[in-house]
Structures are given as C-alpha cells and as structure tokens.
Length: 554
Image (tube, rainbow, N blue to C red; front, side):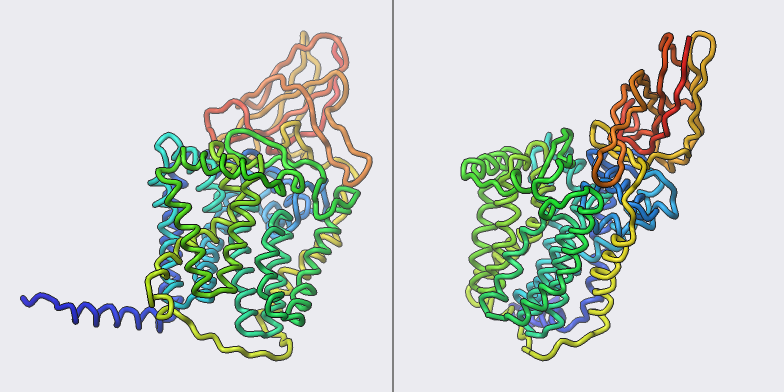
C-alpha cells in the first residue's frame, strides 16, 4: 500500500479548509452544541446535587421569588434586576410556588436552548473577528476548554470548582443570571461587530437591544460598555451610536422603573443600593456594585494571579494566552481585537480585582464569567501569530450602509427585549402585603398557605401540623419557627411590602408534624420548606414559608 505523500496531505488539508469555509454552519454547529450539552450533563451528574437542585449559595431562591412575584403581577423588594424574573415568570404559573418543582423547567431551557446559543454566539463573534476557519477553531476550543482547564486544576480544588462554578454557572444548572450574562455578552459583541462591518442602522439597533438586555440582566454587566462603544466612537459612527442608544433605552427605562417601584427609591442602576448576597462558593458574602466592583489595586491583581497559580498548574500559561492572544487579535483586526481585549480586561481584571472575587472560594470565576468568553477568543487567537496564517484566515465582509430597516429579526428582538419587559414591569404592582419573605440568611421564598400550617395548644405544649407539598425529585425538609415577640416579619415602609423574616428555628424535620413545649405565654409559629444540594443536610435554603399562626399556652 503506497504511503501518502506530502502533496496528498496538503491536498487533503486544502480540501478540508475549503469545506469548512463553504459548509453551512448549522451542519456543524448542531452536533457541536449537542457535544457541549453532553459535557455539561456529564459534569452535572458527577457533582453533588439533590434531584434537580444544584449549588447556588441560596441566590436561586431570590431569582425564584422575583419570578414568582412577576408571574402573579406583583413586585417584591427588587434587589435583583428584571430580565430573568420577567423571562421565567411563566414557570411558577405552570409548576407551582416552589423552586423545587420549577427548577427542572428552568434548567432544561438553559441547557437545551442556552448552551446552543452560547456555542453559536462564540462561532458568530469569532467569524466576525477573523473569519470562518478561526470561528470553527474557536468553537472547538470553547467546547474542550472546560475539560482542559479542569484537567489542569489542583486535585483538591477540582471538585470545588466543578460544584460551585462550572456546573451551576458555566453550564446553567441553576436559576441565576451569570449563565445568561455570557450568552448576552457574546451576542452583544456579535451585533456590535456586525454593525461595524455593515454600517447598517438596523444592526446598530440590534446591538443596542442586546446591550440593554445585558445590563438589564445584571447592572454590573455595564462594564461591557467601553468595549461595545469603542469601535463606533473611533469610526465616528454617530448615527449608529445614536440608534444603538435609543434601542438600549427601553431596557434602561425598565430597570429604572423596576427599582423605583420595588425599592421605593432610585439607586443609580442599583449602584450603592441595598446589599445583595450572591453565591461565592461555600461562604456567603454581601455585594453592591459601586464600591466592590470598581476597586482597582495592582496588589490585588498580583494576589489574584498568585491564587490562580496555587490552583492551576501554570499561571504563566494563562498569562501567555491572554497577552499573546491579545497581540495576535489586535494585529489581525485592530479595532475588533481591541474591543475583545477591553472586554476581557473589564471583567477579568477590573471586576476580578474586587475583594469579593476570591479564587479559593470560586467567586472569582463567577464574577468574571462574561470576561472568560473573551479569554477564550484571545487564547484561540494565539495561532494567528504564525506568519501568514492571519491573512489566510481573513474574511471579507461587505459594507452596506443604508437606512434603518424593520427586518423581521429586529422586530422580534424589539418585542422580546424592549417592549415585553417594559410592559410587564409597568403593569406589575408593588406588593401591598408581604407575599414574599426574605430570610435572615438572604434566601427568599413566597409566603403561601399551600403548606396548610396549623398550630393548636394541647396538654403540655403546642401541636403543629402541615401538609405535604410536591418537591419533585428533591429531598426536602421542614423548619419550624417560634417567637414570643411577633410574627417574625419586619416590613419596610417604602417600596414593596416584603417580609424581612427573622424568627428563631425550633427544629427541622422531614415529618409533617411536630410537638413543641414552649411554656406558658403568647407564641407565634411558622413552618417552611427547606432544601439544599446536599440531600443529607438538616438545614437548607428557604423554599416556601407559611403565614404565622398565633397560639396562647397556659
């Protein structure tokens, strides 16, 4: 059998190159998306979980409480932003008041729709930056990147990284905004680059819609703005810039209205407003945007690099990929490359410099997650340093300036990203009575009679009972609370009337009844449904809270 010659190999490579340039993207993006979904499911099944409940640090309960509220036409005290509560407001209407029955629907949507959207988004951005071949290479790196990174982690850190960041946030197995921040950042970048290439106003409008939704998802994502606006400003595309600003305005207006109605005052894009606890590994921390995220200190950067070096086998490799990739991408496409570099720096350096971004506790990865997408683009660009390769990968995109056209895609984007959220928030009424409770640990849940809680005095104590409630495949428990002061609720005088709940816990139990012996006096009791990703835990996050029942004992 003749040995293939070097010429045969060259012809094979040339044929494969032509095929990759000409193939319809869907033929490869579909199987690549399925591979990414399969990898995500494999990781999810390998880490600790309780049915469909994976780690969120309790933050998923906050998103669920706001989704439940919006689904019922109400607004709680709006600690979070509006995009995710509006997007998933339909889930509690179909699956009931607890996160435990609603989380399967949310996870399925995020995994089966969200993951393909991120894969396609990576491909689309890379295609705009350096052409079709670069797009395929970047997409492959995007898919295998988590495997390579996990392989390079220290063995005693790997499980923590997978459980607290990779599965819930990177692959979307929890009800939080970080997963969607990556998807919207990618599509915002694609829309901006498309607008730069085409000069068309409708593409600028699409960019504004995506950027508005990105900020509406998490106000901290406004760090993406310098990268998004740089090209339009440098090229003096003032008409496109104006159209993009107008397109983003409904999302900003919705955010302002959301905060004004829910909180009762107007923090500037939630900067410096009430502290919100977010997931950061096994510990809980309080965050606000202005003071914690916009804090820059070179010593902190050195500390973060040192922390990464302690858990990854070579921090120098990561530095090389970022720096060499930045040089290669800027050399290949000066304007777009600079945008990607700014995108990376805004999240991975500026936001990652926050005292809350801790590598050992895995919070660094979640807080910088949108910037990690830019890092993948930089890492993929390193081969472009090979002489002549960048030119061979170039893509020619025609410039088609013209008037703003209402294309079907733009109309759908306006309806879903601008009009629908604004209408929903405008119609929603701030709660006039506490229908949502925020626990002292900052978990949050609806207040519901679904538990059928009752308390009655008996000889020597109080007999407590409640009903079973569907929890799907999740193993849950019940917590019993008692106070001799009040019903455990403190309601703020401004904004939505939410119950800020603080009541001593008497016991937790898997049973549907309990007997308490508090002694003579006047007592208030409540019961709640609690659960966590650990099936064996006796405590957990608040999932549902009963109204208070008053009992007098002798």
